[in-house]
Length: 183
Image 1 (cartoon, helix red, strand yellow):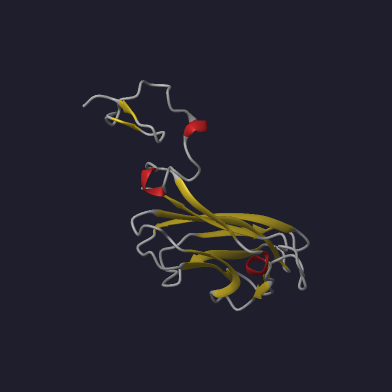
Image 2: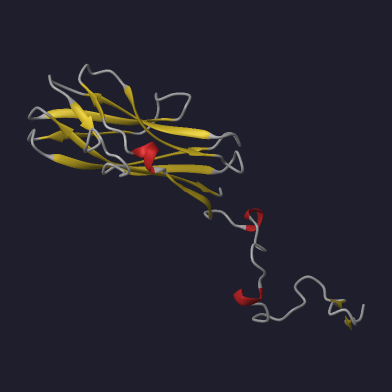
């Protein structure tokens, strides 16, 4: 088929791959023309920042039992096969020297095989920033909620997360995010 320039501004007769390299650049691609379906493996297709009200909790635990801190992030996957990566950091403290605290991510179903990280406070007057990261295959296209859990790992006293008991509109030195990655 011959290439034909039509009077309405369209061109017909060009096959897929028929344009030479370098003809179409970033400026020529229409806004939102590259869809999520066209993004390759490893592409981050959404990134959700935890809302201030969802990450600014203060929680304490002393009994050595896993408890929800209330700190969470929600994400709705676009493909059940994609990878969901959750991360952030927490302001953590203990009120006794050499106390161990543990943190885990609960995915709404279980906490059994999820990320757990702990820290040992050598001095009860110190606050620590505790980073964390967890990932799983989405397994669904329904909304997922990932919540930070904590427990006192040893000794008497309290383990805390969240700098202030009344953080107001601050993130209370905590933060959390989730992203969906094409597999």
